[in-house]
Length: 421
Ligand SMILES: Cc1cc2nc3c(=O)[nH]c(=O)nc-3n(C[C@H](O)[C@H](O)[C@H](O)COP(=O)(O)OP(=O)(O)OC[C@H]3O[C@@H](n4cnc5c(N)ncnc54)[C@H](O)[C@@H]3O)c2cc1C
Ligand code: FES
Image (cartoon, rainbow, N blue to C red; front, side, top):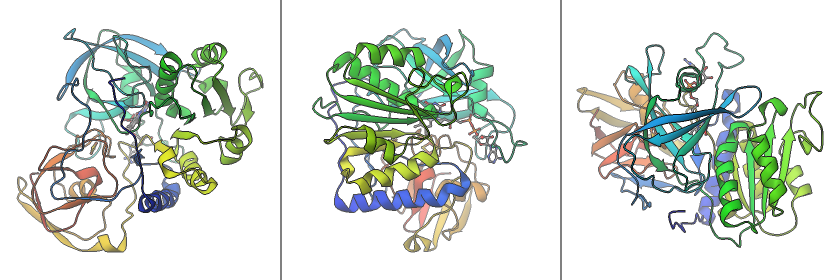
């Protein structure tokens, strides 16, 4: 596993930050999306400009690398989740990754609505690696994202539909090296609880496979919530893993079981993955929790675990942020200060007044041409040179910007700044 022994840790102020972040998430319920992605949960950091955080990228590659799609595999009977197996075109070895990390894709989707600030034809999206490291290929599993139920007239998810409907075996995709701070702590003495909602199963499946191969005696509890059997991804593999690994405890939870779904066979619990289920089911003792799922699950479970007494360094979570949808503005009073923001290339100077969530939203609102992808600090698409001044990150981003650069999608100015955009 790349020899990584990095561990996330959090101080008391960071715990307060975690809870504050969770409360902010609750504010976002109306929007129905989660936009953050955190593991070392919440630290406050100023950047002027930000320095690169340590990360083991020794064996990784820089920039885009071409991969061929060598196999496609539907993962559920509803056909909404599809795995893509990828081999590098250059035939060179693949660097290892940490189970839980993701790849960043540059997808040439052609014309159509691509979101503000996106260059024509190309979108950037992140997808978790859904298999264990060490194979001669990478695998991602992508869920088709429909238009929101209350806005069926909006275009459906651009990248997910492109992958499902147009990307075939033999096609080439452009991929950045594995990255991300959300990965399994390899300490075998830590019992693990993996909590997945829907497509949030992808990083969990990678962790699970890695544990089964390398630490088969390590206790692992997987709580996996889906609507019913038609959306139950990796079903056969999960059942096989559970049958052959007594230390793996599988808790599949259907919120709306179909008449054909057999309790005790297809699923263990009806309802939702919530704190009551965890308390009822888990044995006594300390566990490390890894969570990935939709907004509603994260908004309730993360603070509930903290309230239950789980120490902050034992709670790791990520949410698959919206690439298209903008987060609601959520500034603290101290961040409402006004600052001049100069966009050097565009020749514009505009005033930051705290109305926008982040500099990316601000730039787009003012018609400044900037690239973007994940909109959650993961892919690096919005990385922009910070020529002067300082910015602030509420959380340490997953992508480490180069010295002298900042990530517009998660940065706010703390002084007058000049950006190369
Ligand atoms: C670290 C990370 C890991 C991830 N891992 C996975 C994974 O393993 N598997 C996976 O499936 N996904 C994963 N994701 C999510 C993935 O990156 C994409 O966000 C997801 O596929 C949706 O992208 P899209 O282009 O299909 O949808 P988008 O085009 O971004 O659309 C998203 C939603 O916005 C709606 N929309 C369209 N137009 C508008 C508009 N004008 N205003 C408002 N809303 C609009 C769409 O209808 C859709 O419902 C991950 C994300 C992150 C950040
Ligand atoms: S858009 Fe992905 S890091 Fe900013």
